[in-house]
Image (cartoon, rainbow, N blue to C red; front, side, top):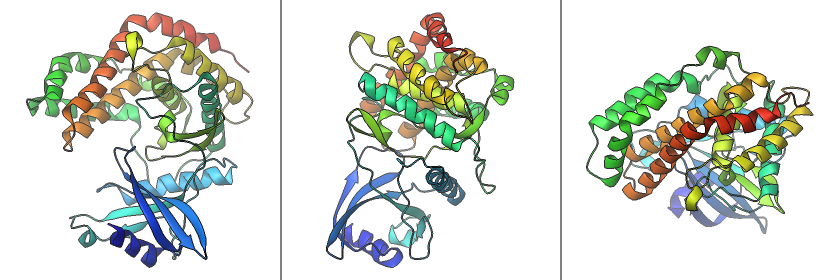
Length: 360
């Protein structure tokens, strides 16, 4: 493995000699490695991202263009992309080097300061950290709002993927095996399909503010120090979509409990804290402003939609790789519990959310 990375560094980069490399197992889609390098008697730390096989080149170009725009707009807590010797932001690694059919792409980024304290399934940061994360998300939306993406890449919006998700879930059910995950999925299949079919608000979706969403904003993709967010990373799921979905997904991550009697619940007090902080900062930004009445009225539905997409990610992750049945059953059960909780507490969620109308 070290020989492989030495080849990449010496061929495409001028960053010095590789001292140490360590695989990070926090991600599920792309592979991440921490690099310690020595150049001119100075040690530096970097992050190497190896994109999964089949990732479109234009998809990576969008992500990197977004990151460069953030730096241009003064959003200086995201990683810098290390250019190659040819001034590119990523390179193609020939398939023969990895004994694969398809080529893969890699990029190198600066390593952000701060601590990795949480993950998507261990999200309950302190209230101060929660509020600061909400403020940072609002600042991110304000910084990127007027950026329109790149002409070379347009990803499907989440609302436009519902039909494909339905077909994919049916395929998984028809080809399910006998593991505990398969059995649980089949037990919940009819209910999941009914919930998916509730998504009938495309006209309203089209009218909401669109921007380059982060797409995976959770505590595990943030670095913290002294209860402040000092780093935001992992823009792999970024795309042009509605701002409301980005906020809804963040609420799903930051405000859901994985433990105790509240497991599978959306914690309403945390939801209020997050929205209050987000609305305050967004209201001070000249570009996008705070969530408006339409966005707030449909925010619970967007939380529901974001949970469906989390379920889709869980199903795809399980059925497209040799995944641990019990681990993924835990993920799926958590999302199903959240869905059932939202079904029975929707009015309470609406009441809490609508408190933040007309915030300036």
